[in-house]
Length: 218
Image (cartoon, rainbow, N blue to C red):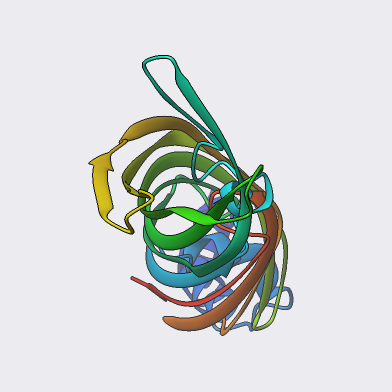
């Protein structure tokens, strides 16, 4: 009995020392605990071009109908601003995040009558895009990070079309519309690893084929 009591007392005295010693040991694989340090929120600004509406020429109508008169036009000049955007991502875990995005772009186009080749029509469009989406981070090493994602939403085209009559008078009229908006991000490379980082992404849709920007995580 005395031996059992002495052994028990010895174990009780040794246990705190053992726990203290273990807690002071360095963690050999710090990356196994990286989920503890991830930031849950990210805001970003970006610029991209060209967008799907530029590529597919969806920015205006090439046929104008008024009563029994129908005119067809061909493009003789255009310019685009590209699309500037701002967004927010919320990380559900270190690898999956939900996001919201808003973008704006402008474009001007000049058209000529197909039959006469005379400049008869121009269009100015301001495009507002809003989307929500999901992202997946599939690579993380040091300051480097790679992800992909998909977004869906709606685009509002605020368009002013102007017809030029034979007397060279300009006749403006509104032709606003809504479009289904989407974006598929094949890869998004971010460098920074901490609070502030820069990124570049390649995708297809209403954000542009190539995007670059800055993001802040907190």
